[in-house]
Length: 143
Image 1: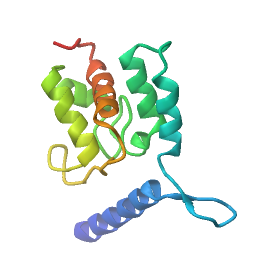
Image 2: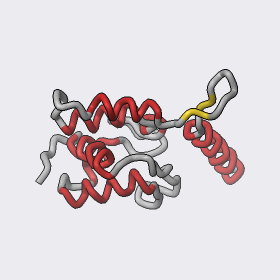
Image 3: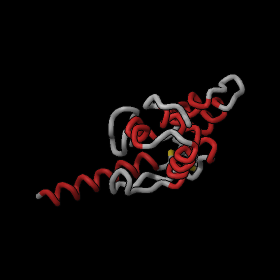
C-alpha cells in the first residue's frame, strides 16, 4: 500500500514539474513563447546602474524565474527552502560558484532523489547573483 502511494505521489510530482516547466503558448496558436521571457525582462530591469545592489538583483531574478515552483524562502516545498540552503553552505565565493553551477545544470542527491530542473538559459553571472542572495538569507556575509 505504501509503495502504491509513493508511486502515485511520484507520478503527480512529475506531472506538476512537467506542467510548471513547460513552455507557454500564445492564444492564437502561433509559435511557443520562451518560458524565460519574464526572466529576461527582469534581467533587463535589474541590471540597470540605479539598482547596483547585487543581493537585490539576485532576489529579483529569483522572483522572475520558476524557482518558486519548487522552493520557498523559508518553507520546504519540493526542494529545500532557500534559508535551509543558506544554513547548509558557508557564504564563500567557492560556494556561490558551485551553487550557481547547480542552478544552471540541475541535479539531485544532495537534498533527496527529486531532480532539480536545469536552467541552462541562465548566465553564470545571474546564477551567482541568485546564489549570493540565497546564501545571505541566514544573515551571513560573504567571506
